[in-house]
Image (cartoon, protein in one colour):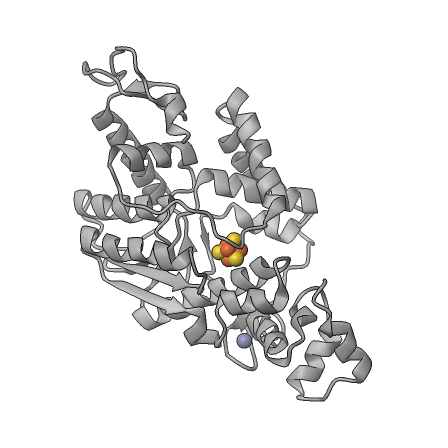
Amino acid sequence: MYAENVILDMPVNCSSCEKNAVLKRPKTGHSMCRECFFWAFEEEIHQTIVNAKLFTRGEKVGIGASGGKDSTVLAHVLKVLNERYNYGLDLFLLSVDEGITGYRDDSLETVKRNRQQYDLPLKIVSYQELYGWSMDDIVKQVGLKNNCTFCGVFRRQALDRGAMMLKVDKICTGHNADDVAETVLMNFLRGDIARLRRCTAITTGSEGAIPRCKPLKYAYEKEIVLYAYFKKLDYFSTECVYSPNAYRGYARAFLKDLESIRSSAIIDVIHSGENLSVKEDIKMPVQGSCTRCGYISSQKLCKACVLLEGLNRGLPKLGIGKHHKLHDKLVAQEPLTEAEEKKLKGIDF
Ligand code: SF4
Ligand code: ZN
C-alpha cells in the first residue's frame, strides 16, 4: 500500500499545530497530524468546488459510487462539506452494476454499507436490466480484448440513465488527479486533440447530457488512500477481473515513476493539459440524439446502440472501429450482405 512510504514512525511535530505528526503529505511534503491532514485535504476540495462553482444551492447531486476508495472518499467528503459549509445539496449514491461476478457483486455490498454509514439514498442500475446483457455475458461473446470498450460506453450511458431516474441535476465522479493526468498523457500519446481538450475540464456535458463534475480533480491518489486509511473508511480494493487495459497501465506506471522523483509531476501534467493551446479549427462533433434510444449522440445511432446491435446479432466487431456505412444500413433496417456479415463475425479483432 502507498501509505507505508508516507506514514511517519519517528516523532516530528505537525507543521500546522504542536501535536505529533503521523504522516508526510505526498502533495506538499509537510509533516502533519491526523486532524490537520483531514482538514487540509477537505479544505482543498472545498476550494476546488468553490473556485469552479461546481454546485448551486438546492441542487440534487448523484455521486457515482463504485465502492472503491475514490468514490467512497468523495461521498464522505461531500457529506462533510455539505454540512460544514451548508451547500444545501441533496446527495444521492448512484451505482452501476456491470454484472461482473467476483468483482462488482462484492463492491456493491460495500456501497450498500456506505448507504447506511453515510445515510444517503442509493440507486443501482444494471447492464442486465438496461441492455439485456451483463459484462459476464459480453466477455463470453467478445473475449477479453475489447471488453472495456463495451463496458465504458455502457457505463457512461447507464450513469446518465440512473441520474435521470433519480432526477438529479448533476453527477459527480471520483476521478482523481492521477486519473486526469493519465488521461491527458494517453490522449496526448494518441494525438486525440478533441479529447485532450475536453479531458481536463472539471465539468463536462453541459451541452445536453446531465452535467458531470470531478471534485477530486486535484486530489492525489496517494492522499486519497491516506485519508481513507486514517478515517477507517469502508471501501473495496480489488481490481476488475476483466481489466486488461494495458495502455492505461503503462501510462499509470510512467506517471508513478515520475512522481517518485518529483511529486508535482501529476499536477504538472494536468496543468500542461489545461494550458495547451489547441488550434481552434479542430472539428468537434455536433451533438444530436440517437434515433433509436434518444440518448445524446453525434451519429444517427449512439455508440451503445451500435454495440448492442452487434451483440444481439452475434457480430461483436460492429461497434469496434469505424463501420459508418454499415451503421447507416442498420438505421434503415437493411439486411447486410454475406461479405459484410463475415467481416463482422470474427471475434479476434
Ligand atoms: Fe469494465 Fe474494463 Fe473497468 Fe472491468 S476494467 S469494470 S471490464 S471497463
Ligand atoms: Zn442509442
